[in-house]
Image 1 (cartoon, chains in turn orange, blue, brown):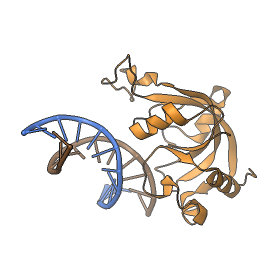
Image 2 (image 1 turned 90 degrees about the vertical axis):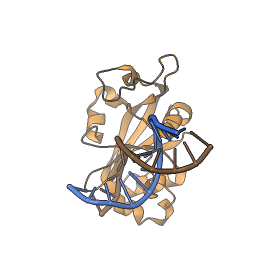
Image 3 (image 1 turned 90 degrees about the horizontal axis):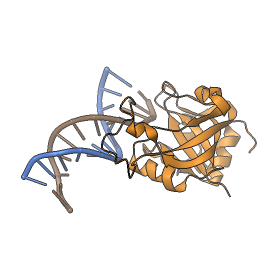
Image 4 (image 1 turned 60 degrees about the horizontal axis):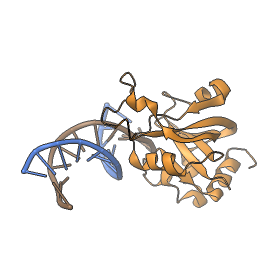
Length: 156
DNA sequence: GCCAACGTTGGC
DNA sequence: GCCAACGTTGGC
C-alpha cells in the first residue's frame, strides 16, 4: 500500500502550474536542505506514493493538487553545483548529504484547499502542517489524504 | 514587513 | 555537550 506525503513549495519559486507544465509533468524535487525532510526523501518516500502539493508563503496558503512519486530518493546534484542556490560546499561527494525524488503531477483540485479550511477540520488536527512544524516534507495519513481530496473536490 | 518558532552553527 | 547567536520558515 503506497504512502502519502505533503510537499511544500513557494509558488514564486516552483508552483503547481510549473509542475504540470514540466516535460512529462515530472520534476526533480530538489533543494530540500533540512535533515528530517532529507531522511524522509532518502529512506521513506517510495515510488508510487501520493503527494499533496502545498503552496506556502502566500496570502492564502493552500493544497493545490496531487502528484505521484516516480523515482525514489537519490543524491541531489544541486548540492555539488557552485552555480546553484542549493549548493552545499560542505557536503562530501563520496557521501552526499542531500537527496531528492522525482514527482509527476497527477490531479489538480477543482477547488484548492486553503489553510483556514484545513485548520477548521477536526480530523486533520494532528497534521504537522497545522502544528507549527516547518517541515517541507511531511507524512500524511491515509485518512487525512482521503479527507483532503474530498475537500478539494476529488472523490478519492 | 513583522516576528515567533524552530533549526543550525560554532565557541567554549 | 551546552547554549547563545544567528539564519530560515512561513503565517499573519
